[in-house]
Image 1: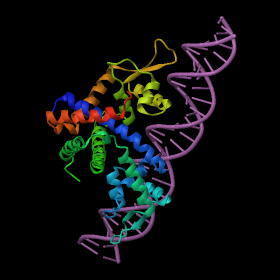
Image 2: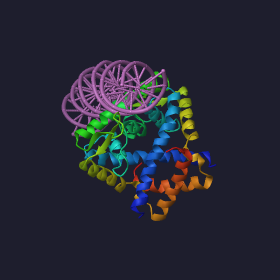
Image 3: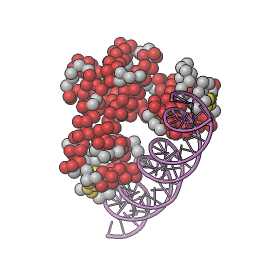
Image 4: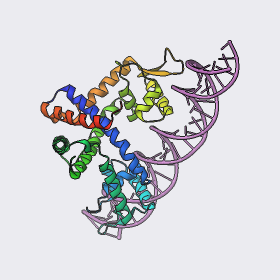
Length: 144
Length: 144
DNA sequence: CGAGATGCTTGAGCCTGTCAAGCAACGTCG
DNA sequence: CGACGTTGCTTGACAGGCTCAAGCATCTCG
């Protein structure tokens, strides 16, 4: 496979890129009066998908379920989401976006996409980059 | 420039990739008995470069100088680094790696590089990816 | 129906980070 | 030289996010 040197360069680039994106999204998120973890949770709540249990959210956020409870409470306080009981299983709680929550999520996503550093790339470069990253991700995380 | 859709995909991929790398490096870092922030600081301490003031380290870590004091103290406790006064300016403290610190840093870097998800790419793909990322980074952060 | 398992919540405690105040050393200007 | 403002680091008080352990409600299986 590739050389060690190029590999090292790529890791450094990934770190830089990430710190760059973190700084950019921070502004968007704070404009919504949200926390980083709150924004992450909001990001996960796709209105088009089936409602997800809090436990599954904890897995995806890689954190303790009790923590999800706290973050969900914050979103609920702000009127962005509501906890609804699962219709079939009374133990399970699902978190569903309110109308305001959907709009806030839209703004966060749009803000993140709009400030994406990838926008400086042309159409061809973007697709090539997409192809390469897909290769990396598919090879590394067969799960999902 | 590129389409909105591809741009969005790239942002999602970057997030996935980062969470992937975070999980991988976590193991390496914990094996050294280090914290994430301690590892970040260790990462910055290039033995080949000129010693850096604590303030500059704070800038690079994007955190408060007082925080750097605390993290440095932890590294010092573990015998990985020592705080030395700056020869020319008595106010300034520089953080220098000890012998053990250099070795630990080597292991962390080697571990991170060795588990890099980019290793699945061939030589050509790696270089192409490197080229694309360079383009993105240079366009976005003219400073540094 | 009873025992165990599962999911969520609560409270205690830890760790990490920021902020404000203090101290030491430097530079400058009269 | 000496007094003043600046700069760099450190300290202590404090807030915030996270985890762990315990508790409660609900489901499942015998």
